Structures are given as C-alpha cells and as structure tokens.
Length: 267
Image 1: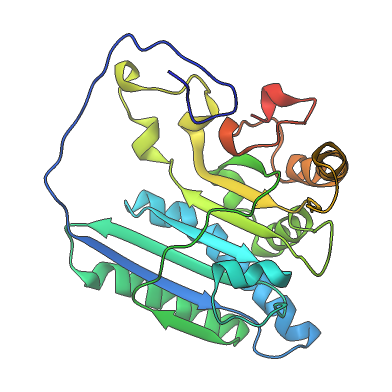
Image 2: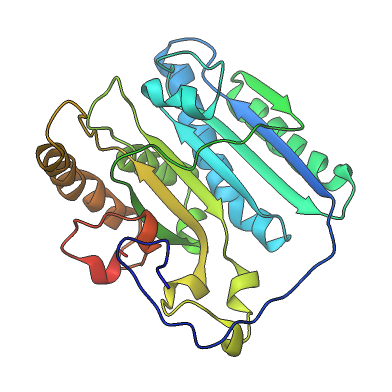
C-alpha cells in the first residue's frame, strides 16, 4: 500500500476500524489583522499571534481541537478572504471545534481570547461563528515541526519574535504562511501502546503540529532549478529558525522539508 507521503510504502498486516455515530459539530473562529499600517499596530498584531499560540495548550487540555492560520503578504488572501492584499502585517484565523456540545463553551472560550486581545492590544478583530474551508498550506516546499507545550507557553514577547523569525519569507510580497494544528496533547499521549500508529516519539509529547511556507518556487523556471532555489532558502533560513524555536524534534514526513540534511530530527 502506498502511503500519502512521497515514495513511502507499507505492508498491511491488520486493519482495526472504529465506528462512531454521526456527531454534531460546533465551530467558533476569529479573524484578526492590523487595522492601520503603522509600526505599533502591526507589532500589536504579531503580539496577538503569540498570545493565541501560547493559549493553544490550554485549549487542548480542555479537549478542544482546532487550527490557527497566520499569513503575510499575498498569501493572506488564501487563508482570509477579504483581507487586504498584500496584508498589513499578519492576518490570523484561529478556530476551535468540538462535537456533541452546545455552542456556549466554544463561544465563551473564543470571546475570552477576543476580550484579552482587545484589552492588551486594541487591534481590529472580526468574530465569526463559522468559517469556510481553508487550505493547510501553499504549493511548493513546506517545513514543519512538532511543538511542545513548554515551547508554546514561552513568554509572549519571546514567542512573538521566534514566530516572526520562522515566518520570514523568501519574497516579501509573496509572504509566508504558518499553520498550527492542534492534533496532539494528552489525547495522543494517552493512547494505548497497542493502538499507536506512529513510530516517532515526538508525537507523544507534542501539542501542535506547526507547518510553515516561506520558500518561493518560481513556476517559470525548470522544476529542478526552481526547487533548488527554494531548498537552499529553507535550509539556510527557515530550518535554522525552527531550531531556535525548538531543537531536535520531529515532523510529519508528508508535510516537511524533504531536502534537509538533518532529516532524522526534522521529519
């Protein structure tokens, strides 16, 4: 059986299927961006990105899954339709979801983070109860890491700078995208050994699978040449910034940089 990763194959020895009744899903999301093009407002937007990111472990511990999208430049339009193009600073779409509950717990949690951001930074916020489907990343070469609770709960200003560093794009106008998927935490860590499908220990201690798209793949060039430039950018810039954020962790192979030399701790 071919897996969804590039050139990865496996032999099926057993199939275990769990079935569930149809569930009612509840989703709450917020979108925020800098309201005016000033240094203070753009910096406040970055602070809000870090504040939301630092609260993700708390939401996961409460049982909420979800995804946070951060984008700059022209890529922002992919993740936040209606956002300025190119974006003024970062544009963020953060969502939480759960099943078979009322809307009140989700609304209360989302409104709390909105109130916190407004009080601290006073930037433009748009609250919406539902959001349309969004892409997980841009085409080209991605880079990713499995981030721990400790990393995400770093002081906001420290986390702010490290997220900005990881998101530095190869081309300013094109921008970059940062995706934080809340797929781990206690739920993964407490899965019985007999039911674990991942051989990578980092999944058992991670809280978020983070993906970043910073490299520019020029589709006007021959593929080998276009990917060579993007690969060099990632390895000389983004991968090193990841290591400054959290060192020696893994990533989901299908959404990681296949051109890094340190693939043992990066994919």
